[in-house]
Image (cartoon, rainbow, N blue to C red; front, side):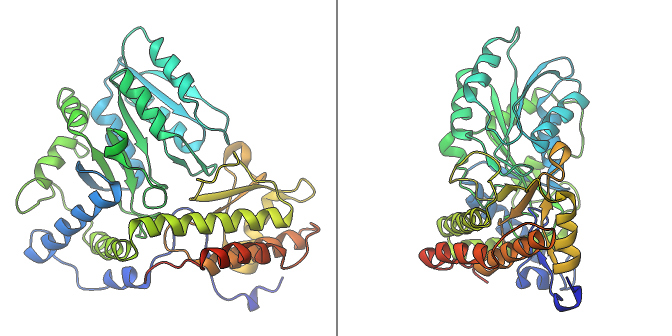
Amino acid sequence: MSPGIYNKSYLMTAGPTPLPPAVSQVMAEPILYHRAPTFIEVYERALAGLKTVFQTENDVLAFASSGSGALESAVANLVEAGEPAVVASAGKFGERWAELCEAYGADLTHLEFEWGTKIDPEQVDQALAGLDRPAKAIFVTHSETSTGVVHDVETLAKVAAKYDTILCVDAVSGMGAISLPQDEWGVDVVVAGSQKALMCPPGLAFASVSQKALDAAADNPTGRYYFDWNKTANGQRKSPADSPFTPGVPVWMALDVALKMISAEGLDNVYARHAALARAARAGIAAIGLERFGPDDDDANVVTGAYLPESIDGGKLPKLMRDGLGITVAGGQAHLKGKIVRMAHCGYYGAFDIIVALTGLEMALIDLGYDAKPGSAAGAAEKVLIEAGSPEPVG
């Protein structure tokens, strides 16, 4: 391949994701003082907009950190050293919950499911029933970015309620791409980050926390300072709202613009767009002759994963696409490195992003010696997108 003729870059990873131009532009404006009325208007408006996206009446607590900071806030507020906690994982980011619980000294029960499979609510039920002492909290993942699998949070919430256990859900990659009606499903804690489907740069972490979870955190007052939920909740509930620490002002300005875009598109339309792009991606990889990684579900709308052919050196594919074609996709992580490719479509993505990425994947595979018919992936995706109306994000 001749890199010189592929002079545009396409970011097709699940975080960071591409930014809408208006989001990038607002961050170039003069910075605001975070106690001034002009910024407080932005702050309060964005906090209200977050409630809409999280589908909740809870406080959506915000921290200047990556999404992992939101995960750590949940563990820091709910886990006590020596006390039971349960983690159910089926991928790299589910395992992060376990690592955090161990770091805070929990008496951990870790249910590990095979990567690419779904967490089994029945096994979670059995684990909670078998504990000598009840666990205050159970930690799971909604959309597992390392595999593309979406877990059954609605059923897991029913299991947690059966044992009066606080359910904490990592929705870092799923929030804004797949519906997770927090209040309707009775999920106590949902955490997310700014850099994926919310169409912002990295730098903001969110924890939507029920009053039950806030009360539980208040009963466990030690082990954190910056990530103290009640400290942040007390500040955000003031009139005017106030962050207890200096917020990431430019990212808040970006978030305000991004949330307006989501509102203009309509949340249901945002979900429908992600679903259509995912269907197109799945159709494209099937047309190339690749096997999809993970269960054959229709709700995996954040990342599409595919097994790479054994006949090629799968470890070379992401680099070839990035350096030769200007298309950045993700390979497999840990034991899946070189075995799968992951193409994201969460956030500021439209129909032609998927066609470009699939075409690049096909070209790279052919360059590595795989027998594929040029144009087959794009053609299959195009059929799906025509039927869906070629969904594009607002802005």
